[in-house]
Image 1 (cartoon, rainbow, N blue to C red):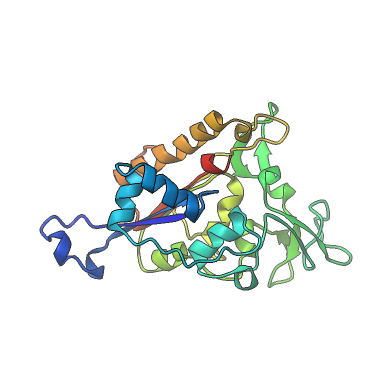
Image 2: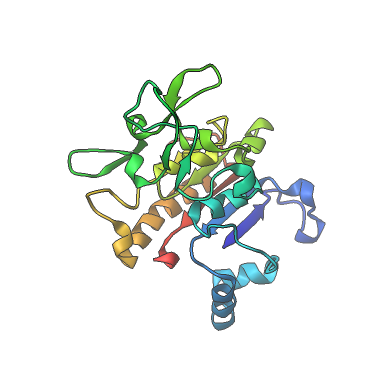
Length: 259
């Protein structure tokens, strides 16, 4: 499910006077596992909820189709690229690519063709199996770049299309995003720099604690991202340090519903 909130901080104009030129900030909320039927049922039974208020004041567009596969990667990419797997190039976080090599093949020797894995397994972990919330380049599949160099393939480099974050940043806007795996570096787009403030607290530690085993723990992981968004709404960076102001486009993923 997608929730997009458009906000203006121009106090002089009334709601009726606002037009598209008044919109200064867009907040994108992606809720994994929340189907249209679930939303309709919740709004009907909770008329005073925040979702009900958004439904009354916004537009509920129900004539949509999910991309295949119906998973987080293609779902989010449909929202931030406007494309489908056939255009942006990724249909799942684990797939096969004929142009890449095994992570251990650091010279790109031999014939290409290998699994392309962009999940929690590519994180950098400490000795206690806790993710450091960054990507470990040694776990990425190598490929030959445009200059013939054998380099690690980051998630953002696997994208064939740009993202809304790159578009906004190219126009001079500040951008931010929060999600559940460092692999969501992919929202940076092919430039690798589309998101100024990217926050990706790992939700599933390989060989360690898996927050998705518990709804309560998953909510706690979601809450980290909520705190980041609130900081950004106040013009700070996700961690509360001074920032350049409220992002022009920003948002987060909620995971608890799908757990």
